[in-house]
Length: 603
Image (tube, rainbow, N blue to C red):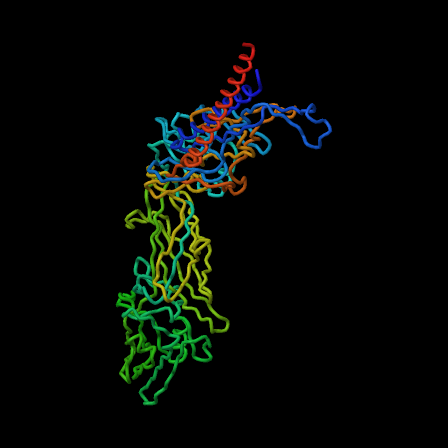
């Protein structure tokens, strides 16, 4: 038998292998995540023909046949198309999803190896869904492996309230099947921390002074009233007094002997020597010391402050004629010109008001019941950056917890604190501790890391943002998966938290993986250069072990990766294989004819 038949026979078998591989690629052209095979050939064996010309400088080799060299896996990505499947996902980059047949399985990826309780498989087909127990599975029912934060127990999701620890755990390397029950409830979380970001504008909102300076029994809060900055008051028309501009109050007293005496008092920080005042107490003392008149709130026959609260200049000395002038007097509505003022009589201003703002923040107890953390702010000092030394704008804050309709006080007593704003409009505030049904809430008015509380005069007073760790009960609304494969659960109560992540593994040598059907691949080992090794190399964790971000690619939710078979190339290669097969068949036929010819020589 001549070598022509043997060579052509091996060529036929080899090209049949190529045809089988390419036709299989074409058959899987619409298989999600399919990785095409690339058939490769090699010469079967060869020999050196010394008999032709042993002294020739030319190599006289003779090759015998062909055989399959490999059926390599193509690692190029397929195309990505959008779907409506809630748990459909695609991976873009180097790496594989991890699945396994065991519901209680465990797969741990170390830097120098791995641990597993069962066989695990790898796939690019991300057409996942939930089974009847809430586990993520592929179309064959294999469980999808990933990181679980263990926040779900018996259909209840319990918040960790520790984002930093969540990030740390999401970067770990121990994987298990992912379970997301459909009937998942969010366990209520007690509020323990509240951060509020506010802007307080002293020129937009005002409150009647009696609501600030009178106690529930209608008595004047003497100390609070006396320390009030005059520039932190407004008139009944909701116009700030602006005592730094409208600063003059002039009193002219004409006694019985007809000798007028004038006294001019000015808003400023010069002190009594310069007849300057800042607070109500300062002006009270100046008027008393200089004129023997009194400045006080207007009172009724029982010496109770009248409502609405007004200021009065009271004559407790002798009968006189009194003139009250100046732009501050006009703002207060207390002007008079040489009018008689008998002993025991007084001249009353218009009602006064105070810059004010109020906020209400929803908080929750251990049972998820809603309450309101209510804070009332009123300005006590307008601040003056041009004074020596400069002074900050100050507000008094009274905070307490009420029922959800703000009708009944829940706190034992309101908590009071003073906050300030420096010349750059930055807040200076100590955190408050507020009693809440036997627990404590840490309450900060400084804002958060991104936005600080301010007193910008070109913005309305408002509560710009709130961060608080309490939550009411809620039910699962939506599952979202970000580009790092982290699974977030969105609940009806507004909670949005991670519960785990999709497992991703990569390999140094993807060609070392073996297809096992069902669009799955597995790790295999073999003796290579005398050593038993995993052909693909040990699995590599798909994310960084510090920040937990994917290293080699990204996850796309509601997308699927198509087969990576290039139909044009496949059909072209199919024709080439067909031609190769035909030519080898022709060579076989020729070799057969030559043998017949040789046999016929005996005839």
